[in-house]
Length: 407
Image (cartoon, rainbow, N blue to C red; front, side):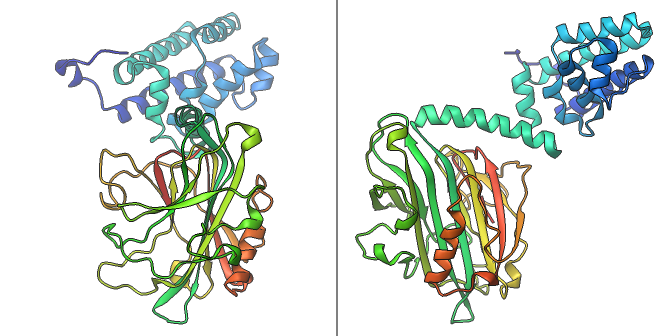
C-alpha cells in the first residue's frame, strides 16, 4: 500500500478525477500515434495481430484502450509491462519512430506514477474509477467488482441465492385518494453454505417521508391457502417442495421480517421461497403533508447472483409512469434510508430502468421461467386485468449488500 503524500507534494498533484483522465488521455493518444506510425488499424485488432505476429488478446486490449470513448473505462484493458514491451519492440522493428516509442513509454511511466499516488495498486485504482466510468465497459467492470463481493459475502454469511425477486403492482382503489398495492418478494434457489440459524428472505415496512413507521393497514395473503394470521403469506404453488418453513418476526424497528427457519446445507437442501401480500387502499394516491413521495423498495441483504425488481403501474396512474431507479447503501455508519436523507448514501449504477411495455406477458425472466405465472396469479387474486398495466424493470447482477433499490 502506498504511503501518504506529503502536504507539499499534495499541492502539486491534480485532483484524482482530473489527473486520471488527463493521464489516460495522453496514453490513448500516444498509442494511437504509434499504431498510425506503423500503418496498423486499431479498429481491426485481429488484422494487427496477424500482420505483426502479435498475440490476438494483446492487440484487442490495446484496441479497446484506443477506441473506447470513455478513458475511465479502459484501465482494466491495460496489459502488463511484459506484453507492452513485446508490442513496442515489434513496432520498433517495423519502423516506429524513436520519438513515438518514447512518448508511449513516458505515458506509461506517468500512468504508474498516477496510480501510485492516488491508489497504490491496480485493483484499488479500478475500484476508484468505477464511479467515473460510463457505458457498457463501465457496466461490466462494476459487475466484476460486485461479483467478487458476492463470492466474499456468500462465504462470510454462509448463504446465497440464484435470484432475488421483488415486484410491486399498483392500481386505482375504490377510494380515489388511495391506490391498491400487491407486493411479491422471494429468493430463488436459496442455499446455505454452512449451518446458520435463521435468514430473513423478505421484509415489509410502511414509512412517511422522514422514514418514520406508519401503520400498514390490512395486509392479506395473495394465496388464500396461506391467509391465516399464523401463516407466512407464501405463494405455495411457486415455492419449492417441500414447502419452506417461515416464521414472522416483527422487530422493534417496525419492520416485519419473513424468516426461513434453520435448515441443512448444500444443493440438496436448496429452496425457492416466494411470498405475496396485498392491501386495499394501501398508499395514498394524492399528496398530504409528510407523505409526498411514492417509493417502492427492494431490500437487499442476501448475497444473490441476480436481482429482478419490477414495478407494474396501472394505465390510469399516469403520474407513476416512467419511474427512475436509485440504489442506496444501508451501512450502519449513517441512519438507514430514508432517515439519513435522500442526498446521502446513493450508490453509482450504470444499469437503467427497462420498459416492459403494456401488459404483463413480457415479464419474462429466462433464469426463472415460472416468473410470469406469479404475476398472473396476483392479478387474478385481486381481480385486475393484467393487460392494463405498464411494466418497468431494474435488473442487476450481483446486487451489493446491504442496500435498497427503489423506484
